[in-house]
Image (cartoon, rainbow, N blue to C red; front, side, top):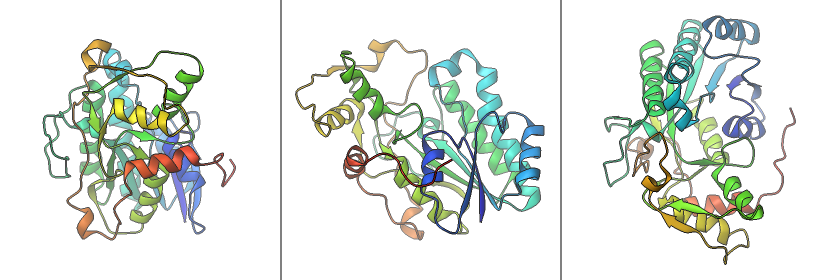
Length: 287
């Protein structure tokens, strides 16, 4: 089974490549090989590579930068999924589209499930919401996997690596206490995606490690699990950072579909973090 993985050099794309089951031939592509914001590039890649399925991880995830370049955010995060959905639908190719907890406004205080209404706060969130809507309209058989607060061993934008790098560089840590969510290990997410891929599941499906925490206590768990229990962290409020893009205060993901699916619940985020911190170098397949 040949699977095209967009964003194949990113955090999740790298995990999907490394953890691909024996019967899967992963084909990871980066931006220079496939520009998802170009309909012609998407069509050419699908025609040339002839995948049996596409896992669409590529996105512009620079949340604050999206506020300053709305056009680019929607071109990549909304138009890109539309082009992929159209092309895969007309060829009968399975599509899994990766989305985010940032489609929610964060006003709930219980986990968001698949049927909850979306109401994003930021340009990034709105562009991802539009991407979901485009996929649903263009490819009724597609699966949309929402996840949150991803961390892993490869790729950019990893919160765990950022915290540890700051400590090793002597940078003072300031982390917010008023953003709560579901930290999710991309290795667990990748395995869940592969479990869902051959099923007949369609529509929106939430996949995240279980449990919840705020970013401050997540950072504290990273340090405690890495041999830095005495390194202090300044607990602050999100407003103190004065970031351009608002973030949901609460975006824990739950699932009403999981109990009636064949997918087992992912482990608690603490166990997943321990696995990440004690893992050796990312092995497996080589590019």
